[in-house]
Length: 557
Picture (tube, helix red, strand yellow):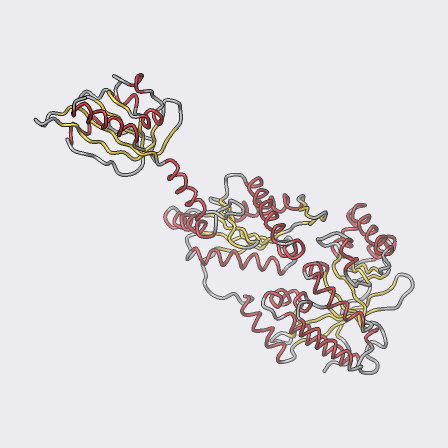
């Protein structure tokens, strides 16, 4: 074998062995060689491709625009040099497959600078590109729900704000606050909480379709950008979402959760200063909705002002601290009357004294206190002041008294020790005291609640589970809580006037509670009709404006 033949054979073996695709053409652009990689990627066997125009075999379009590019032979004829087109291209194979490629096109020139043909060398970057896209998706989306993350959502909001300035468009922003996430996480762990978030994301996608940009911006907070939606249309969307959620039940560990969320709605127009102002306004609106109760919607105007709201969180935090330090709280009481045997009980209720001497209801400041770790401080104030007043002769006689405890207090070991020490002083008979905790707080802090309430019960106090049936709707966990009385959620009691199903629900709670040896209280009994229904449903006690409107506790300065 001659040396030249051997070199030619080695060259062909080398071309066949490299990882890039190689195609050689003659001066007319007809294929005369393809290595195995080129055959695989183009879907053309070398024998079938031989003699065909390279544009028939090697069909390449721009990856982003999907437009064809000039023939590589034409480019080499005009440039007569090696070309490395910038960017990535898509190779359309004969089989219908597509590959992401980057290529180099070189002219084959004779010693006399005559163009003999071209050589295409191209590399398959499909897997690399797929990984790039995956990384881009990961950096722009919430990996748990598949929704946009906050960073990329802000890009969409910024584009919407630009539209309000340039084209006078009007958009709306919704902030959704999922209420039960912490409860699910605390009861069953973050695996259950993650599944709840995934299901809520799917529910939102199904409810609003493709005409909203949806993002999870952290924890149980979601945002929706509604382009070209005024406030009225945004409210319709909020109601649609709440309607879908009201029919949804989250199941985990044999338990069913009723899920709810509060919605803040904000208009975006040319007065909106920035993305951060828009998101802050939506978050504030959602928080204000939460202050009003469960499954509420709060609308704010255009998110343009950076001035502090008179009722902003910081404002209320300062007022609460001042009220604690300056004794600017007042205690009220409301009677709880028996429908059969038993004695009258009084629930101690808290009010704040405003700057002008007005009485401020707890709905205005308790949610703020719970959010900023001030609720336990308020509980300490209430317990100290109540016990001191009840120790005086003639204050409510010897009637039992209920005091409310927050979820924060249930987890505060220092507060428990202080409370037990205070009760052991003997100022008031512990048997006269009842401590109320809400169902959601008790279940959310189940282990700590069991220890905390059990210690109070050992001293002779009784335990009332408030707002029962508001969300968790199960009796199973009651076996693990030291509870004496169930106070049936007021919304269930009030709804008894709306049909037989709510009445049956209240009746069932009474029946099962009695089988477990528990007493029941129907709250929010506002008229004689509900009073009769509560009696028919089997409630042991009733509470509400029909019975007694709250009034100041006697003996206060």
